[in-house]
Image 1 (cartoon, rainbow, N blue to C red):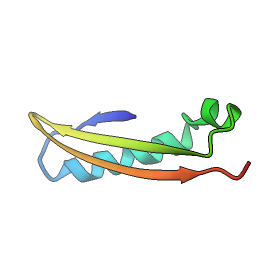
Image 2: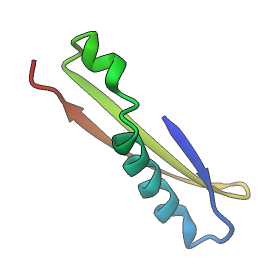
Image 3: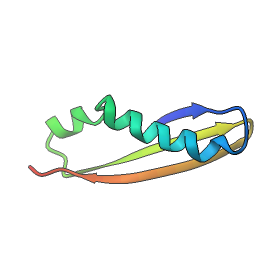
Length: 63
């Protein structure tokens, strides 16, 4: 799970998508792969003031 803060309401979805990309690029799920988990849910949350947008995707691993 990762968070990003935007400045304007239209930034909400963009920030949530950027977070998912960051999770993949920085390989935050490596410990789960090493522990042989079959899947992991990546969650990205974009914030603007008190509003938020959540985007998630399930990643399945071939063991």
